[in-house]
Amino acid sequence: MEGVREINEKVEQESVFVEQLTAEIGKVIVGQREIIERLLIGLLANGHILVEGVPGLAKTMAVRTLAKCIRTKFQRIQFTPDLLPADLIGTMIYNAKTGEFTTKKGPIFANIILADEINRAPAKVQSALLEAMQERQVTIGEQTYKLDEPFLVMATQNPIEQEGVYPLPEAQIDRFMLKVKIVYPNEKEEKQIMERMAGKEEPAVEAVVGPEDIVKARKVVGEVYIDDKIKDYIVSLVFATRNPEKYKLDLKNLIAYGASPRATIYLNIVSRARAFIKRRGYVTPEDIKAVAMDVLRHRIIVTYEAEAEGLTSEDIVQKILNEVEVP
Image (cartoon, rainbow, N blue to C red; front, side, top):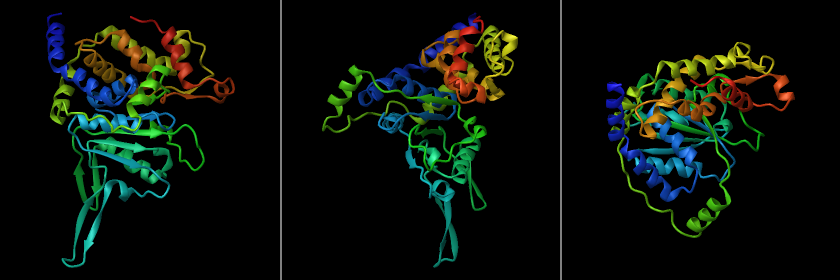
C-alpha cells in the first residue's frame, strides 16, 4: 500500500489545476458539468470525443473556453458537403516567381479542434480528420508533419436534420475514445444562462495552465493504481457485450457486434483520468461505472430485433452495468 500512498500524494499535488480550470470554465459555461469533465478526461487520457446534442447547448463555447484556459491554439472547423481534405490539412502552393512549392498548413494544426457537424462532410474529409486523430501527423505533398501536443478533437453530430448527412461508419466511430450526449439545462440553469448572456459580453477567462502541464499530468494519470479485481471487472463488462450468456444476460439476440478491445484499453485509461480529476491515486468501481456509458455506447451495434423492440445500445450498456457483478 506504500506505493498507492505515494501515488495518492503525487496526484494530490499534480491535480490542483483541475479545480482552477473547472472554476474558470464555470465563469462562462453554466451547468454542463459532464461535458467539461469529459473534455478534461479526453485531454488527460489523450483521446478524442464525439458529442451529440441539439444546436445551442454551448458545445462550441465549452471547447473554446477550455482552449483559452490552457493557453493553447483553438480552431473551429465547420464541416460542409463541399469541404475538401486540403481545406482541413493544408496544401502545396506554387509560387510563380520562385518556381517553388510552399506548404500552407490547414486548420488541423492547432491543439484543440472543434470539428462541427462532422457528419455533414463526405467520407474523404472524415477520413482525413480521423487519420490525423489516429496518427497525430499529417502528410502534405511528400512531407509529413507532426501535430502539436496536446492534440484533442471534439467532433459534434447533430441528431436532428438528417437530410444530406454522411453518417460516420462504425469502424471510424470506434476511434473516438468517448461519445458524450449533451442534454438540455434544467430550469435553474436556463434562468442563469439567460441572466448571464442577456446583452452582455462573454465573461473573460484567464489561462491557468499551459500545454506542458497537461503533458506532465498525463504521465501521472498513467501511474494511477488500478487493482487486478478492477481490471477483471473492466474485462467482464466488455466480454458481456460479446458473450452475454456467460454472464447470465438475456441479450444474445439484441447485440449484433460487441465492443472491441479498444473499449477495454479505453476503460482502463479513462477511469484513471477520472480518478485523477477526483484527486485520487487509485481507481474505484465507481470510476468505471461513471465512464462506461461514454466508452461503450458507440461500440455496440444492436440487431434489427433490438431496434424493433425500441432498444438502443445505451439500454444494453445499462443492463450490463446493472447485472455484471461489481468487485
